[in-house]
Image 1: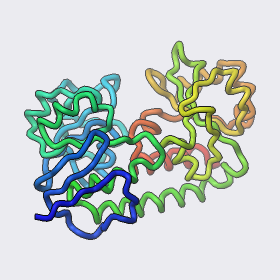
Image 2: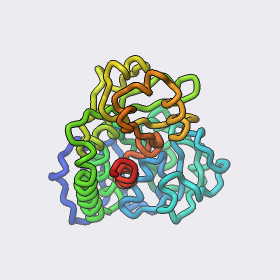
Image 3: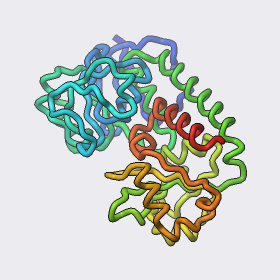
Image 4: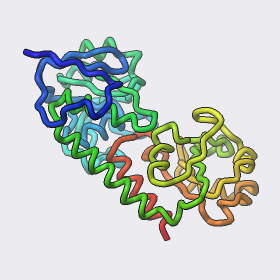
Length: 311
């Protein structure tokens, strides 16, 4: 059979999105190269990012590793039926294999997967994963990273025509939401930050236009403010120095949007910001906005933002 070799840096236009995959196919990814001899049928998703990408092209996983054990899921080896934000799209009741950093290898082995897909968070256990099944690890944090990754996954799973539909739907959704948000974002500087709350409630990390979250919001028409470096950390006083027109706060860790709002309103400095006085500070869940990072998450984010911001 003819062997095809794909590279993560290739431009999307170089893919033929109508032809069926010819196996064996070799795919380059963040941890090396992996050859698939046949179309995988039993796929494990290590993390919500991988799950979003698989679900978007119609692939149901047999196993799933959550972003963190902080997100309470059933014991290892049990079926997962309640997956945050993506659960309504999961029909396979995938087995809980642990988390994306260090999944349970024994449970993975028992699932007899044909393919394991995750992020480079699992790079330290890549050799062990590869001994269980062909494994693809990708980077997914930067802006539009999934648009480089998804065609490779679609190629591996013989789902290329589906990928082209996903991309078209994504682009259409961005344009629709951008038009709905236009009046609320026009001529306004928007700061996107996340905070873990608790003892860290006065510390904020900037999500700027270089990462997935800030990049998506930029595409939606927001004039996203960049930090002096990627994931720059600022204090409350730092927020006051920036004094943006709009603030989007993502509640991380043990915090929730409601708790983050309470912390914000309790602080005399944040209460005096231009955005606070104009009632243009919005609170969302970090998990949706920063951990999933795929076309389904983008659609859910667009809906939440239009609901909260458009008046």
